[in-house]
Amino acid sequence: MSKINLPAQIEEKKIQAGDLNMNVLFAGDKNGTPVIFLHGNFSAAFWWVDSLLTIPEGFYAIAPDLRGYGWTEDKPIDATQGMKVWTKDIINLMDALKIEKAHFVGWSLAGGILYRFIADHPEKILSVTLEAPVSPYGFGGTKGIDGQPTMPDYAGSGGGVVNPTFVQLISEGDRSADDPNSPRNIINTYYYKAPFTSEREEDFLTASLMEKTGPERYNGDFVPSENWPNVAPGVWGPINAGSLKYIKEDIPAMLAVENKPPILWIRGAADTIVSDQSLFDMGGLGALGYLPGYPGTDVYPPQPMVSQTRDVLEKYGKYEEVVVEEAGHAVHVQALDQFNKVFHKFIQENN
Image 1 (cartoon, rainbow, N blue to C red):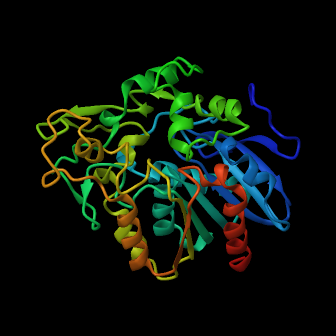
Image 2: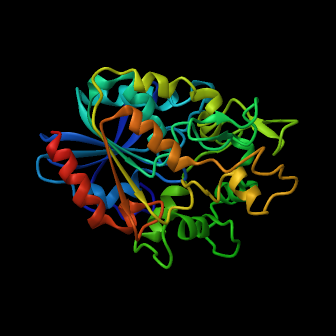
Image 3: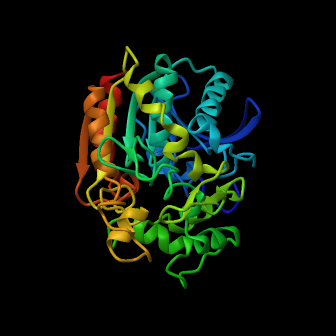
C-alpha cells in the first residue's frame, strides 16, 4: 500500500476473487467469525482501519477495496448490472477465502450493495450493519417514500450529476485545499460534522484518491435528457450503477427473502450526503436555488433518502435504527466509540 501508514496489526494481501485481483485488509482473530467491511464511494478499505483495529475478540475483520477503488485491480464497472457488479466480487472473495457465512458492514454506497446481497445470498449472512446507507432506491432521481422515478428516464441520477471539477481533481491526485471542490475539502466538509477533522486525514485522502476515474469508472458516462436537470444515466461506472434504472428489482427481491438476517442501521444526525435534504441531490440543490431551470418541488422534489430507507426497513421488519447526534456521514470515523458500542453488541448478539 503506497504512502499509507498501515498499522502493524493489520495484514494486507492481494486475493484473486474470480476475475478480479482484490486488495484486502485483515485484522483480529484468524479463527474468529468473519466480519466483512465494505466502503463507500470516494473511499477505500483503509477508511475502516480503526474499526479493524478495535474488532472484538473472537472476530476476524476483512475489508476489501471494491472494484473501481483503492489498490484493487483496475477493471471497468458495468453499471447495467446494478449492485450485482460488486455482489459477485464479494461472493468470489468469500469463495477464495473459504468463508461460508459472515457479518457484513456497508457504508454509504455499500449499503446499496448489501440490499442486493441480502436478496441474493441471505444464507451467507449472519447480520448486516448499514452505516449512512444510500437509499434503497438509489441516489438521485426518485421522489416520495416509495421511491418513484422523478422522471421517466431517471434524469437527475447517474454519472452526469457528479461535479466534473471534483472528478478532474481526483484524476490529477490533487491534495490541496484551494478549491471548494477539492477532494480534501469534500471529505472535511461533508464526511464529518464540523469542526471535526481526522488525525488520519492524509492517509484517508491518499486512499480515496485511488478511485479509478474515466468514462467506464468514476463518474461514468451519461446521456442528454429533455427532462430537468437534462442528464440521464449512462451504462458505465459506480454512480450509474446506483441509479434506480438498474436496481429497481433489488428491494422487492430483498423484501421477499424468507429468512431475513437482522439489520442495524446507524446514521449521523448531521449527515448532509445521505439525507432527506441532501446537498448532493439535484432536487435538494434545486430547491435551495443552486441550480438553474429548477422546475419546482411539485415537479422535482428533494429525494427523501432517510425516509425511503426507514419505510423499506419497516417493511423488512428485522431492524434497529441508531442516530448519532454529533456525527456526519462517516460515523465510524467521527464517533468510533459510539459506533462500536452498538455495532459490537449487535454482532455479538447475532453471532
